Length: 499
Figure 1 (spheres, rainbow, N blue to C red):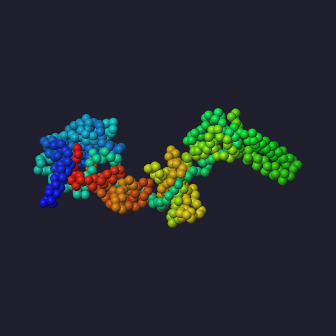
Figure 2: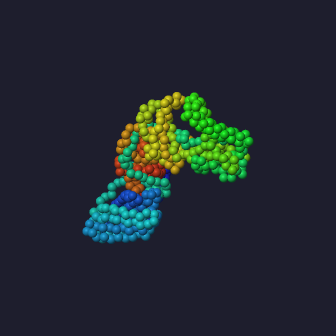
Figure 3: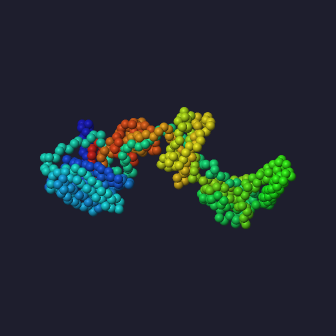
């Protein structure tokens, strides 16, 4: 008795689900019998259209779902003109000022002549304007000519337009694209040595607030030669600087005097060489000093050695500083280094490679060295014994300074030649129980799950060896939600609408 009651309860619940799934108005229920559907794409619009079997002198409601392919959202506004032309050239048209509901236009049409029609939809609006042509709209002379409706595939997954429009969703055509095999490795972004500088104080002194009212902050961009900081030198520092300058000037004068005497053969080559060495030594010290500071009315000014951004300030206003103390770190990130740790087992392939692509944390894009005007610059001469890798170095331009020094990278060192492969974006693949799967949109609201055999990965795309055909449209954003539709009660009911 209990089993009978439970079975009756299940039937009642399933009946309720079936009733809820077809939330049509009375005019839309006719779509279930002798219905037709069309799914087409232009560069800017997807149309998914449903309409009943068309018989002359009978009104037929068309459900025209329009999706803006910029974001795969419903076309919520726009004037839609629908024109029909038959084989005799007879034309008629009608206009919908706006969609009946977001994304859905519902023109009602009555045909007076049977035959094949061309349907032209002209959409004009601020959101999207487009022209869509649909051929072979068949109109029958009477109901007896209407063919029986084919049964819907049991493998088809229903995921309605209204559901798609509410989530982040997108699809993309499966195409052949050029791809290249890779050696997968880890990497790190590093600064170019000549574009990175630690600025130290060449003298001891005090950093007075009154002399540094325009002090640059962290993140500020400076040019080579710009004043970074004014230092009020100690007495000893002033004496030391003056001594360096005097020593240089005296050594220069002495070298010029001895050179003149040597030209007159009044001194030996040895004497000239000794004087020259003394002058060049003091010149290096003096040039090093004037490369770092210049004398101003506020004391001695520390200047920027390179163009770049100030990364660190290692002092406070009012500090007493000493000679050699680190003051600033300056980095110019317009060119960076990618250090790739290539497994020793893959070293030969990586050593012969001239290109690589990489992803870094926090940025969805994949970057390619060759497309960043970069190149391979060197390969380490020794193996890192700790992790059994060989460092390989690439140099590249940094677009908009988006990539930061210190970021870790997932690197694909390119090997071999490019070939064309059937491929889809990585985002289209879902791992289900260890299998690579994807969801194909067979119609506007119908999907199929495919199990894939995949191959190489390149620039965000995965080679598909089997499971998909070129021209099919695969879900690239929202595939997980389509998968959930398989598990929902509605998936057991079949194709339904919540219009």
